[in-house]
Length: 276
Ligand SMILES: NC(=O)c1ccc[n+]([C@@H]2O[C@H](COP(=O)([O-])OP(=O)(O)OC[C@H]3O[C@@H](n4cnc5c(N)ncnc54)[C@H](OP(=O)(O)O)[C@@H]3O)[C@@H](O)[C@H]2O)c1
Image (cartoon, rainbow, N blue to C red; front, side, top):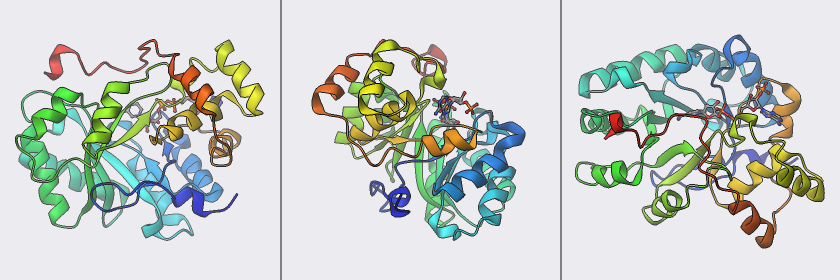
């Protein structure tokens, strides 16, 4: 596969190009560094971690020890819920950057829209962006309500909203809102954490395309212009999940897959009261 497909991706509203495909590392544990190294060797140019995953250090080692130029790798980490606030968010960011052992971050996300200090945290991210320490700033698990609220206080709009997204949780309204407001949608749990890979409709369609169910789910998100960050600690799966740039899903089959939505969540629901 041509290497450039791994760097290809939308130009997000910060002006930066963000690769369509990244490696997720939640629960990769002691296998994180090896998984990230395998991914970089396979061509991936984007890794998604978070302070709460406890593996920023391992991700940083994989990035720094790789023969790939730092500037070609898109690294994301996230501000955890306990670290909200203007001063605390800056402190948490510097700690994450140190763990990663990097001089700058490509994308820093507010992990969850916890109540109370969303505005102060965003102001901290804007400051760090202006200081050149973060190329792009964004949010995660924000609903339309949270994104609308941001309009009242942001000077820099969020570049990305990372949310749970796959055909079984097709958040169409949120996706359309983000497109309209030039916020790039990024799909976590794009494989529904492997809980729907044996759905007969999916396996039948995957056979027709001579692809695996995982590849079909990832391609479905790409067809919707949504970035994907599948997690795996297995080299074969890491490679399998990257073979998604050389086929298309027909309009009729996209319509069919769109209809599989059942609001099926494997992660927390941000519509919960605690995030209002
Ligand atoms: N912002 C947030 O709140 C948030 C929340 C959750 C996740 N995330 C991010 O999104 C990433 C992806 O989400 P996720 O890890 O929850 O779920 P996911 O990527 O949908 O699924 C990962 C699961 O699928 C398995 N898998 C991977 N490739 C496979 C394949 N080709 N065939 C069969 N099984 C396969 C993995 O097992 P093996 O590892 O054993 O291969 C793992 O159990 C995370 O790692 C994290 O970086 C963000």
